[in-house]
Image (cartoon, rainbow, N blue to C red; front, side, top):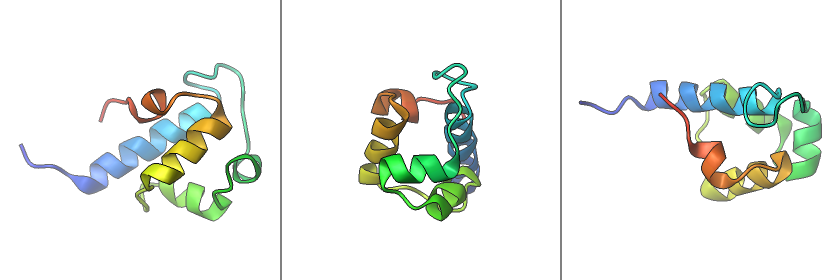
Length: 81
């Protein structure tokens, strides 16, 4: 099976958005892009691109987002494609 980077990026972006909106893991704890920007130090436009599948985050960015969202790094990257 061939790895589809675009499909993977879109699936991860959707997963991140659902966590941020409190639909997964953080039940009911919705957070805005701008607030996540403030808490993580990751620019909101970059977070938006990640959520749209247009950008692939570095490991350091993933860790910053996980800390800001109060989820483990494992939970942040554990999703079905």
